[in-house]
Image 1 (spheres, rainbow, N blue to C red):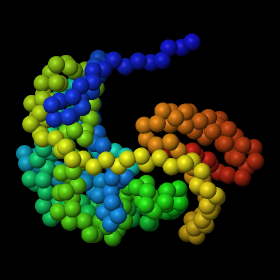
Image 2: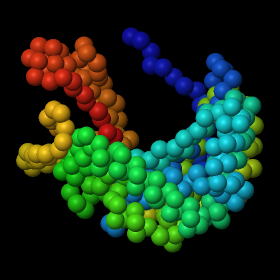
Image 3: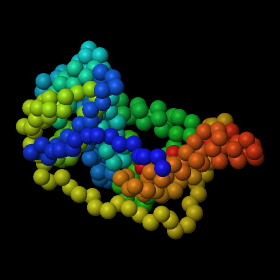
Image 4: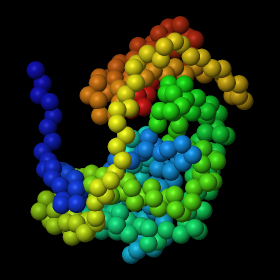
Length: 306
């Protein structure tokens, strides 16, 4: 029997609740710093959709000690790359740098966690609001087949469920977002006790702990982060739901959606394996059957969206 791969790491917490995971990897002189916040589009309320993703953009507009766009320039000057992403259940920010530059990434992430609101102003909010709206136009509204995800997600989850709306949000809600709304969202969810910091690479764990304590240790926790409760739904919707969307596209495309286990459920691992067996490349079962043998499709894909 093959043994399962193991990764050696340490897992601890600061006094303010920040979870710190460190894994040493000496294969290359690089380090990956990844800060995950337990906030995504599922935490948004009616009338305030798109806030989690909008705030991901705002996080690159500067903080008390870092000017607008300086976060990126400092990381690039150190020989690194960086980015962020938002999804239904989480938001994350990450930097990959030469390992001797790990401290700059930790300081940058701590500065915006602790002092971002000091630099937030109407100009920055308006600027990033337009960026996100253009992203929605490009990714959804004006792209061939672009409405599929909004349609499928809307059918799979009832209107009162937080997965009913997409991460990008609606134009109306983005237009209505105010400085006060965005600031309240930050104060609620961007707290050390709602985050996990992972540092992986050619590093000294004791040094990483010292830097993390130095830069993050003084940021206060938020003891009143609202709990969402159980979001799971039965796998069966109660009946088949169909919708035909007419669009200016060259070929018809069929999307089929199923409810899957929630994020963190170990059954998602089995779903990933099943997706590879069914549609993971030209040798997969669905590709052989639908594309090669029956020749009723040009392509087939299966993507678990957990």
